[in-house]
Amino acid sequence: MRIGVLALQGAFIEHIRMLQGLGVDAFELRQGGDLHMPMDGLILPGGESTVMAKLLRACGLFSRLRALVEGGLPVFGTCAGLLLLAKNVGNGGVAGLATMDINAKRNAYGRQLGSFFTTATFSGAEIPMTFIRAPYIEAVGDGVEILAQVGGRIVAARQGNQLVTAFHPEVGGDFVVHGYFVGMCGGRTRI
Image (spheres, helix red, strand yellow):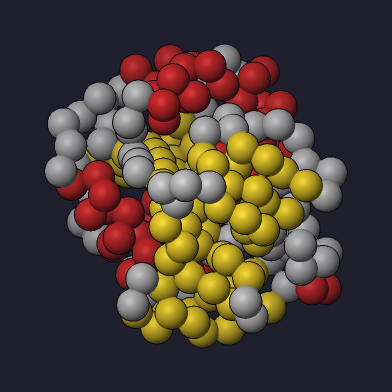
């Protein structure tokens, strides 16, 4: 199994380490040509969503990446990655891939000083959750499964081939969320 990690900006190295810890081959995606490499899934890491959206276009990744996600490639977006996948982003968000039927609120917990750590249930398992200038999901559309909530706010969801978390599972040292995503990728042929 091979999973690509968008490596334009943000916490991509941490995701690669988590995948390697699960015995999964991971590689960095930096330019349009990298999307032609065989992969079973893709991670869109945390970082700054407006910068990432601009870099996706500048590096020739935007259209092909969107087509891959719409074509069924499993994708996992954390924090800024969640915002890139959301169809609607409030609080000053920039339009991203807009492939997942969710309404997200950018910087919903405040700025850097609003960052926090907690534990909560994700798809039935109690896990650590680190929130850094995090968004949350204000509303979900039909076919979106809510996987985690903190304080009554949606912080993880899945719609078909798309998984998103408002928190950063790559910094918590727990493999549950990445294992869940690897499971999403396991039953498909490489694209």
